[in-house]
Length: 200
Image 1 (cartoon, rainbow, N blue to C red):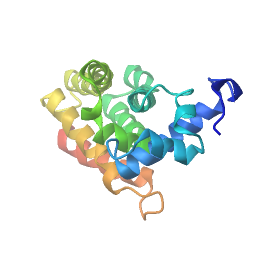
Image 2: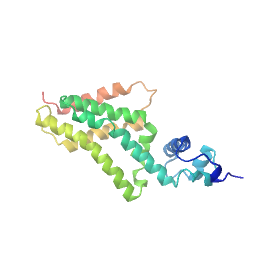
Image 3: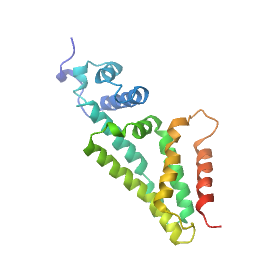
Image 4: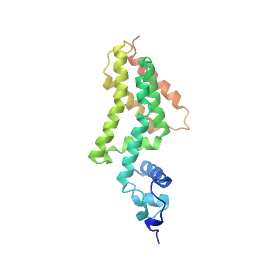
């Protein structure tokens, strides 16, 4: 027989992290809609009813993944954007930061890029608001670079979309065992961007 909830370890410990880690692996492998709570329970070695002691729904797990992905991206970007360094150096650091976060959290960011439509509208809006704030840091760097005469007269929003679109595609092809390191990739990407927008 399965254990009663009173026999289970308390909420708020390592068990939730184990469940989340397994959910990330399963969502990446099978897709959100292709993964059931029973799949997650089987992976962690719990009965399905016991799993609900730790998490209320599959949707809760997905939303947690999205909020953590946004938090990982936002961490450090404000500091990068607000320094007194030339805009071209800040943009270089911001691109490298973004690529590093994607590479270090590849499964989580894969879900972030693939599964946004699976969130209900109100939670999707919250995630999109965080994503838009993050984009704003890139736009601010580019806008300031134009004002300082470092960058050509480009559309900051369009350039931001181009940069992040290029960087976000990393999840589809990057491998830690591949021939290019993240530093190599960041150098190539930043050279492409800066060669295109920096004033000669």
